Image (tube, rainbow, N blue to C red; front, side, top):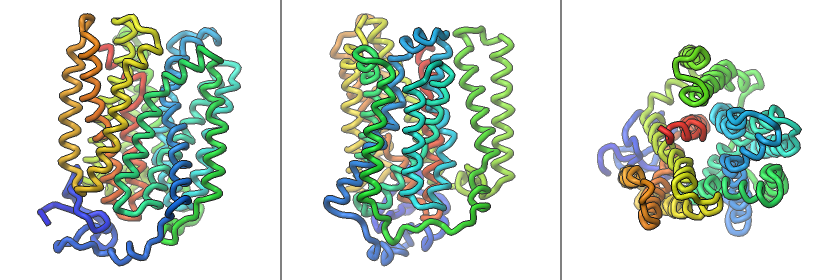
Length: 472
């Protein structure tokens, strides 16, 4: 085995980080010098669902991920109609999308801690129920404020759905199948997120924008029924014993609130600056100052809280955590810029209708899904993440550079072909951070590392921020 190589379930994996101090070979399941796994015997004793039961559980997980990802962009095409109905200014309508991203990012570590100390199935069902309550509030909202509250409740539950989906996949899939299943899960996520604006536009035009949220209720109810009927926790999966008081301390409410307030200020500054107000105006400067101050407060809280922090220092110092989270942050940052930029380009420059714009954006959707499957199966076959991650980054960089050259004279062959390159790279790289983190984390740190990774990814995924960057 080459220096720096690590194993996941007895197979060599060079992650995006390949070095860094694991907890211990015995605890984390990483390789020893002779390339064997310290807990290989334990894996042989583990039990996993098979056959029809496995298929049904996968369908239920995919339905949950589909719903949570669909709502990332389903209101994008409905915002003008909603703001007209509620007689609100357009900048208020931007919160219909932003608040969902913000709450997912802030609450991801919160749910990851609960998954660590409680049974996965119970927490997952609760998160789906919260998401459905938020959907009902949003669907029946009589005014803009109620709709924003409903979207925030959706994000609270959606954070747990996304984190729980990855963790449940880790629990039900055999180690050799985890990269492939993770790729499938992210293919569902990617397709759903990109289809969101198209489906939202169809509902808004054909029925009413409220069906953007009503549609979640029957699908979410079906997923809960399937999980309760078919999921049985594997014997090797057990929550960490803790008292209620210890669990509350682990949730790090001060850190969560300071981070949430910081992101709200940052989002407000980007919404106002250079668009509705000049950058040197009082409100913009005040929100930027508050963002910096609250971010410093958050960092201090995390340092003082130690292992009770939502982002523990001992984890963030490990390369398998910070390198994969940074990779996911940067890659998804690029993905969302073009996801929001290209529809603007198609509709403003080529004068396409919303549905035509969605069709023109299809290569990005299709190749993103294909790339997710290719990336997952590739890791499953060669057990090395690093070369696949480098290839994905190269494709994304090349595709982004080519897309940057588009102008009003660009033919269909160019803007369609460039999306193929970018979408393939984005899809391949999209699932690698989560695959590497889940494969290289010890059982004690798996939920925390998953929450940190999702937090970083969704801090880069605010659609309003991506839209501002695409304009400049």
